[in-house]
Length: 94
Image (cartoon, rainbow, N blue to C red; front, side):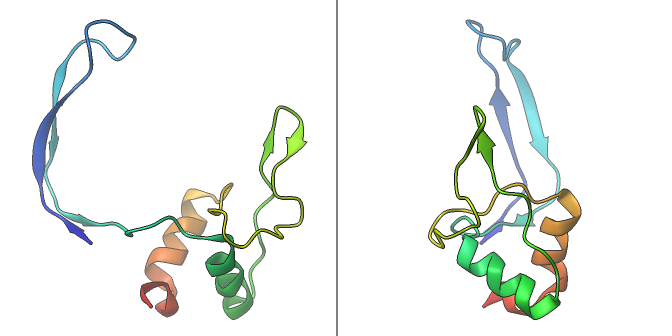
């Protein structure tokens, strides 16, 4: 989905997001309608001969050991891996 440039106010006076301040998005950008799932990222890694990221660990416990739950959103990808997925992989827009 295409997001247009916009301006909004961010922050609150009653927490650590203070002070309230304007945020100006000067250029439009594209964003997916849903998270990238484990299944979609597995397909990407197969088609591009790349690796799955490390499994997410919270409080010392693996959340999706060996990535069996394909419906979960992918996590632990680097900025460059996410950029490659979005820009460099033709199937990402399917």
